[in-house]
Image 1 (tube, rainbow, N blue to C red):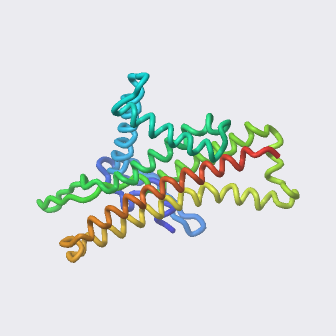
Image 2: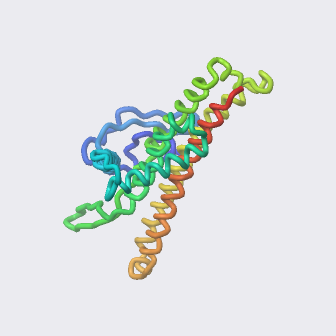
Image 3: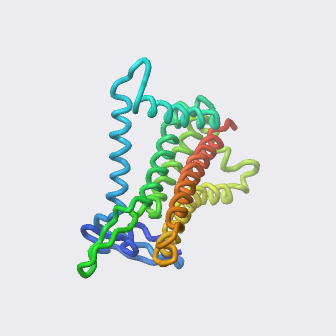
Amino acid sequence: MDAVMQVASSEGAHFIAGGHTLWEASAFGFNFSFTMGLTKWMVVFWGVMLFMIIAGTIGARKKALVPSGWQNFSEWTYGGLSNFFSRMIGPHLGKTFGPLLVTFFIFILLSNYSGMLPLNFSMDEGTFSLSNLQAPTSVFSVTAGFALIVFFCTHFAGFKENKLRYFKFFIAPIPFMLPFTIIDVVIHPFTLALRLFGNIHGEETVVEQLMQLSVFVNGWAPAIIEVLGMLFGLIQALIFSLLAAIYISEAAEHF
Protein backbone atom coordinates (compact mmCIF):
# COMPACT_ATOMS: atom_id res chain seq x y z
CA MET A 1 0.00 0.00 0.00
CA ASP A 2 2.95 2.34 0.53
CA ALA A 3 3.72 2.29 -3.18
CA VAL A 4 0.10 3.04 -4.00
CA MET A 5 -0.20 6.07 -1.74
CA GLN A 6 3.07 7.75 -2.65
CA VAL A 7 2.48 10.79 -4.82
CA ALA A 8 5.45 11.96 -6.92
CA SER A 9 7.65 9.76 -4.80
CA SER A 10 11.31 9.21 -5.56
CA GLU A 11 10.92 5.48 -4.91
CA GLY A 12 11.01 3.56 -8.20
CA ALA A 13 11.24 6.77 -10.23
CA HIS A 14 14.10 7.47 -12.63
CA PHE A 15 14.91 11.14 -12.30
CA ILE A 16 16.53 13.04 -15.12
CA ALA A 17 16.85 16.17 -12.97
CA GLY A 18 16.17 16.90 -9.31
CA GLY A 19 14.91 14.04 -7.18
CA HIS A 20 15.13 15.56 -3.70
CA THR A 21 12.22 14.84 -1.37
CA LEU A 22 10.79 18.10 -0.04
CA TRP A 23 8.02 16.71 2.13
CA GLU A 24 7.33 13.33 3.68
CA ALA A 25 4.79 12.15 6.24
CA SER A 26 3.00 9.05 7.50
CA ALA A 27 -0.65 8.78 8.46
CA PHE A 28 -2.93 5.81 9.16
CA GLY A 29 -0.26 3.38 8.03
CA PHE A 30 0.33 5.11 4.67
CA ASN A 31 3.43 6.99 3.52
CA PHE A 32 3.02 10.28 1.66
CA SER A 33 5.84 12.23 0.03
CA PHE A 34 6.42 15.01 -2.48
CA THR A 35 9.55 15.11 -4.61
CA MET A 36 10.56 17.86 -7.03
CA GLY A 37 12.25 16.72 -10.20
CA LEU A 38 11.92 15.59 -13.80
CA THR A 39 11.38 11.87 -14.28
CA LYS A 40 11.45 9.71 -17.39
CA TRP A 41 7.73 8.99 -17.18
CA MET A 42 7.05 12.75 -17.19
CA VAL A 43 8.90 13.03 -20.49
CA VAL A 44 6.82 10.16 -21.88
CA PHE A 45 3.63 11.84 -20.59
CA TRP A 46 4.49 15.10 -22.33
CA GLY A 47 5.50 13.16 -25.45
CA VAL A 48 2.08 11.48 -25.65
CA MET A 49 0.37 14.82 -25.06
CA LEU A 50 2.46 16.52 -27.76
CA PHE A 51 1.74 13.71 -30.21
CA MET A 52 -2.02 14.06 -29.65
CA ILE A 53 -1.87 17.85 -30.12
CA ILE A 54 0.10 17.56 -33.37
CA ALA A 55 -2.03 14.68 -34.70
CA GLY A 56 -5.25 16.54 -33.89
CA THR A 57 -4.00 19.75 -35.47
CA ILE A 58 -2.97 17.98 -38.67
CA GLY A 59 -6.25 16.08 -38.82
CA ALA A 60 -8.35 19.26 -38.50
CA ARG A 61 -6.14 21.60 -40.51
CA LYS A 62 -7.64 21.00 -43.95
CA LYS A 63 -11.33 20.15 -43.78
CA ALA A 64 -11.93 18.62 -47.18
CA LEU A 65 -15.46 17.74 -48.30
CA VAL A 66 -14.24 14.23 -49.11
CA PRO A 67 -11.59 13.52 -46.46
CA SER A 68 -8.63 11.30 -47.18
CA GLY A 69 -5.45 10.18 -45.49
CA TRP A 70 -4.90 11.31 -41.92
CA GLN A 71 -8.00 13.52 -41.89
CA ASN A 72 -10.14 10.55 -42.85
CA PHE A 73 -8.59 8.40 -40.14
CA SER A 74 -8.94 11.18 -37.53
CA GLU A 75 -12.60 11.79 -38.33
CA TRP A 76 -13.33 8.06 -38.39
CA THR A 77 -11.64 7.55 -35.01
CA TYR A 78 -13.18 10.53 -33.25
CA GLY A 79 -16.59 10.06 -34.82
CA GLY A 80 -16.74 6.38 -33.93
CA LEU A 81 -15.69 6.90 -30.32
CA SER A 82 -17.92 9.96 -29.90
CA ASN A 83 -20.97 8.07 -31.18
CA PHE A 84 -20.13 5.11 -28.94
CA PHE A 85 -20.07 7.24 -25.78
CA SER A 86 -23.11 9.28 -26.88
CA ARG A 87 -25.13 6.09 -27.14
CA MET A 88 -24.11 5.28 -23.58
CA ILE A 89 -24.83 8.59 -21.89
CA GLY A 90 -27.27 10.12 -24.36
CA PRO A 91 -26.78 12.80 -27.04
CA HIS A 92 -27.30 15.66 -24.58
CA LEU A 93 -24.51 14.60 -22.22
CA GLY A 94 -22.50 13.32 -25.15
CA LYS A 95 -22.29 16.80 -26.60
CA THR A 96 -20.78 18.12 -23.34
CA PHE A 97 -18.70 15.20 -22.08
CA GLY A 98 -18.13 13.18 -25.26
CA PRO A 99 -14.87 15.00 -26.16
CA LEU A 100 -13.55 14.40 -22.62
CA LEU A 101 -14.33 10.67 -22.74
CA VAL A 102 -12.77 10.32 -26.20
CA THR A 103 -9.65 12.14 -24.99
CA PHE A 104 -9.44 9.91 -21.94
CA PHE A 105 -9.64 6.76 -24.05
CA ILE A 106 -7.04 7.83 -26.62
CA PHE A 107 -4.64 9.34 -24.07
CA ILE A 108 -4.76 6.33 -21.75
CA LEU A 109 -4.43 3.93 -24.69
CA LEU A 110 -1.35 5.72 -26.04
CA SER A 111 0.13 5.98 -22.54
CA ASN A 112 -0.36 2.24 -22.01
CA TYR A 113 1.24 1.45 -25.35
CA SER A 114 4.16 3.81 -24.71
CA GLY A 115 5.34 1.37 -22.04
CA MET A 116 5.98 -1.17 -24.81
CA LEU A 117 8.47 1.01 -26.71
CA PRO A 118 12.11 -0.14 -26.20
CA LEU A 119 13.48 3.41 -26.03
CA ASN A 120 14.61 3.60 -22.41
CA PHE A 121 18.41 3.45 -22.28
CA SER A 122 20.89 3.59 -19.42
CA MET A 123 24.64 3.48 -18.93
CA ASP A 124 25.81 1.53 -15.88
CA GLU A 125 29.55 1.12 -15.41
CA GLY A 126 30.16 1.71 -19.09
CA THR A 127 27.55 -0.88 -20.17
CA PHE A 128 24.74 0.28 -22.46
CA SER A 129 21.33 -1.28 -21.83
CA LEU A 130 18.01 -0.77 -23.59
CA SER A 131 14.60 -1.41 -22.04
CA ASN A 132 10.96 -0.41 -22.41
CA LEU A 133 9.76 3.05 -21.42
CA GLN A 134 7.70 3.49 -18.27
CA ALA A 135 4.04 4.03 -19.09
CA PRO A 136 2.68 7.17 -17.36
CA THR A 137 -0.41 5.17 -16.38
CA SER A 138 1.80 2.92 -14.23
CA VAL A 139 2.26 5.90 -11.87
CA PHE A 140 -0.44 6.41 -9.24
CA SER A 141 -0.22 10.21 -9.25
CA VAL A 142 -1.13 10.21 -12.97
CA THR A 143 -4.12 7.90 -12.64
CA ALA A 144 -5.22 9.81 -9.52
CA GLY A 145 -5.21 13.01 -11.56
CA PHE A 146 -7.40 11.39 -14.21
CA ALA A 147 -9.78 10.14 -11.52
CA LEU A 148 -10.06 13.61 -9.94
CA ILE A 149 -11.08 15.05 -13.32
CA VAL A 150 -13.81 12.40 -13.55
CA PHE A 151 -14.85 13.15 -9.95
CA PHE A 152 -15.39 16.88 -10.58
CA CYS A 153 -17.04 16.32 -13.98
CA THR A 154 -19.42 13.79 -12.41
CA HIS A 155 -20.73 16.21 -9.79
CA PHE A 156 -20.70 19.09 -12.25
CA ALA A 157 -22.98 17.06 -14.53
CA GLY A 158 -25.25 16.14 -11.61
CA PHE A 159 -25.61 19.73 -10.43
CA LYS A 160 -25.95 21.11 -13.98
CA GLU A 161 -28.81 18.75 -14.83
CA ASN A 162 -30.62 18.77 -11.46
CA LYS A 163 -29.64 22.07 -9.85
CA LEU A 164 -30.31 21.97 -6.09
CA ARG A 165 -32.32 18.77 -6.50
CA TYR A 166 -29.00 16.99 -6.99
CA PHE A 167 -28.38 17.09 -3.24
CA LYS A 168 -31.35 14.73 -2.81
CA PHE A 169 -29.04 12.05 -4.21
CA PHE A 170 -26.96 12.16 -1.02
CA ILE A 171 -29.90 11.53 1.30
CA ALA A 172 -31.96 9.15 -0.83
CA PRO A 173 -33.96 7.19 0.11
CA ILE A 174 -33.57 8.41 3.73
CA PRO A 175 -31.28 11.04 5.33
CA PHE A 176 -29.61 8.25 7.33
CA MET A 177 -27.83 7.23 4.09
CA LEU A 178 -25.80 10.48 3.91
CA PRO A 179 -22.55 9.13 5.50
CA PHE A 180 -22.65 6.00 3.33
CA THR A 181 -23.30 8.01 0.17
CA ILE A 182 -20.36 10.30 0.93
CA ILE A 183 -18.10 7.27 1.44
CA ASP A 184 -19.32 5.83 -1.86
CA VAL A 185 -18.65 9.12 -3.67
CA VAL A 186 -15.10 9.28 -2.27
CA ILE A 187 -14.32 5.64 -3.04
CA HIS A 188 -15.34 5.92 -6.71
CA PRO A 189 -12.37 8.05 -7.88
CA PHE A 190 -9.94 6.14 -5.63
CA THR A 191 -10.92 2.76 -7.10
CA LEU A 192 -10.90 4.24 -10.60
CA ALA A 193 -7.31 5.42 -10.16
CA LEU A 194 -6.19 2.30 -8.31
CA ARG A 195 -7.61 -0.07 -10.92
CA LEU A 196 -5.76 1.55 -13.82
CA PHE A 197 -2.54 2.03 -11.87
CA GLY A 198 -2.52 -1.49 -10.42
CA ASN A 199 -3.16 -3.25 -13.71
CA ILE A 200 -0.63 -1.33 -15.79
CA HIS A 201 2.03 -1.29 -13.07
CA GLY A 202 1.50 -4.99 -12.43
CA GLU A 203 1.69 -5.84 -16.12
CA GLU A 204 4.93 -3.89 -16.53
CA THR A 205 6.42 -5.56 -13.46
CA VAL A 206 5.57 -9.04 -14.74
CA VAL A 207 7.01 -8.29 -18.18
CA GLU A 208 10.19 -6.89 -16.63
CA GLN A 209 10.69 -9.98 -14.48
CA LEU A 210 10.02 -12.39 -17.35
CA MET A 211 12.36 -10.55 -19.69
CA GLN A 212 15.19 -11.08 -17.20
CA LEU A 213 14.89 -14.85 -17.58
CA SER A 214 17.11 -16.17 -20.36
CA VAL A 215 14.60 -18.85 -21.35
CA PHE A 216 12.11 -16.09 -22.22
CA VAL A 217 14.61 -13.74 -23.85
CA ASN A 218 15.85 -16.45 -26.23
CA GLY A 219 12.37 -17.65 -27.18
CA TRP A 220 9.11 -16.32 -28.60
CA ALA A 221 7.75 -15.35 -25.18
CA PRO A 222 8.69 -11.62 -25.39
CA ALA A 223 6.71 -11.22 -28.62
CA ILE A 224 3.72 -13.06 -27.16
CA ILE A 225 3.86 -10.91 -24.02
CA GLU A 226 3.94 -7.72 -26.10
CA VAL A 227 0.88 -8.83 -28.11
CA LEU A 228 -0.99 -9.60 -24.90
CA GLY A 229 0.16 -6.22 -23.56
CA MET A 230 -1.45 -4.45 -26.53
CA LEU A 231 -4.77 -6.18 -25.82
CA PHE A 232 -4.42 -5.50 -22.10
CA GLY A 233 -3.70 -1.79 -22.67
CA LEU A 234 -6.78 -1.47 -24.90
CA ILE A 235 -9.01 -3.13 -22.31
CA GLN A 236 -7.79 -0.89 -19.47
CA ALA A 237 -8.32 2.29 -21.52
CA LEU A 238 -11.82 1.13 -22.40
CA ILE A 239 -12.70 0.20 -18.80
CA PHE A 240 -11.60 3.59 -17.42
CA SER A 241 -13.54 5.50 -20.08
CA LEU A 242 -16.66 3.34 -19.69
CA LEU A 243 -16.69 3.74 -15.90
CA ALA A 244 -16.23 7.50 -16.26
CA ALA A 245 -19.19 7.59 -18.66
CA ILE A 246 -21.32 5.53 -16.25
CA TYR A 247 -20.51 7.78 -13.28
CA ILE A 248 -21.37 10.92 -15.26
CA SER A 249 -24.59 9.42 -16.59
CA GLU A 250 -25.74 8.26 -13.14
CA ALA A 251 -25.07 11.66 -11.58
CA ALA A 252 -26.99 13.44 -14.35
CA GLU A 253 -30.14 11.36 -13.84
CA HIS A 254 -33.11 13.50 -12.80
CA PHE A 255 -34.27 13.15 -9.20
